[in-house]
Amino acid sequence: MLVAYCRYSTDNFLPLGLTPGPRAPVDLASFYHPLLDELRLLREGVPAYDAHTDEAFFLKAHLVLVTGDSPAIAKLMSFSGHSARFPCRACKIDGTAFKITHRKKNGQQGETTHYYFPLLPPTRFPSDFAAHVKSIYRHHPSYTVDDLPLRTPDNYQEDAFLDDPSLTGVKGISPLSLIPTIQVPYSCPFDVMHLVYLGFVRDLCRLLSGSYFKKESPVNHRSPISKSEWEQLGKEMGMIEAPSNWGRPPRDISKHINGLKAEDCSNFLTHYMLPLIHGRVDDRSFTALQQLVLAMSLAISYEIESTELHLIDNLLKQFSDWFYSTFYRREYDYLQVCKYTIHALLHIPREIRNWGPASYFWQYAEVS
Image (cartoon, rainbow, N blue to C red; front, side, top):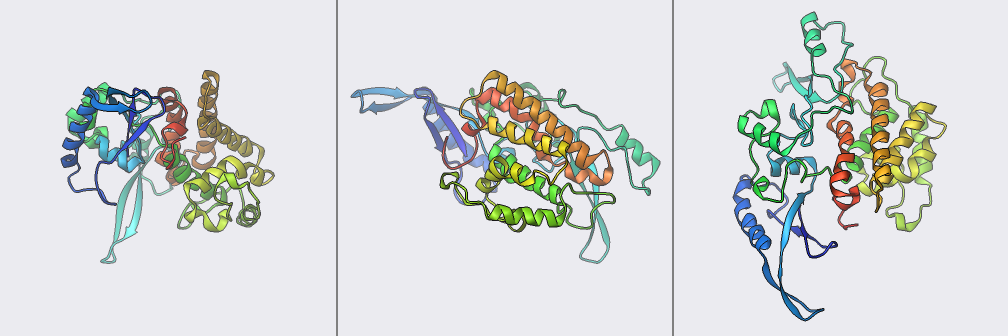
């Protein structure tokens, strides 16, 4: 969904439909021209009437941000998408290759390369890895939470003109980026509803309970909470009598993790998780999860002070450090835990700095 901000009122956001139907069109660019024409008219002003003052005036509106989940933003802004080697619209982190074997229809064994996004490349490998393959990984770029290679409007255009998405993550110049009030990547902030609640929280629960890996777990993989304890945690959650103004009543998360909506995951993270896991994880893990809860609670507040923004930044950095050291540990077999979502958490403070509280540009149906 596109969101246009009207300059005459700080409370008005206008949703602008772009394409009909539940599926993406084959040729998205063909829908841009009438939209761009309408946006041009709105920038110049259209006649309108104010019934309160009984006056005619020119209504002007300017498109300043575009929100949506990662696949939608990738299509609209001509990025390669979250499964590419360079998937991030906020920075140019280089994905780390992971080989996944699978059985073809003809019975032969095939191999597919997936990319994951740890800050540091793996240093521990399976015993059958050749020395030259290990060397390739060890020379992979390394990052810290303070020096991610951020995208800017200038390098977005430079990457688009290179015309090599495999090396840049940009497939071309989006027509939306030609609007004077749109700057890529600043005008397409991460949506907390999809990134955190529907994406990261579910993965975090699977990692905590040991159900993240669909097949046999890698050697020495240990979950912070045993299967029996997680099942008991789920039963206790299902018995919670939460206030009705919190929305959907809590459900047994050990049984319904795949069916949980964004509101369920939000409530679990914000209200239920810490009391339920207290005593079930070690102190360091509990502290890290406290940091995540506090960071996200502050991030969606109606008002955020500059000192609180600095706190959110520090909390997410400390949480990510715990996450990588607990679940990844720089082991090749654990690369699969380093999805796009954990890395993208580190960009939330910059989005808030640009646009205000995260609840002002998320994808919940109502506007906070």
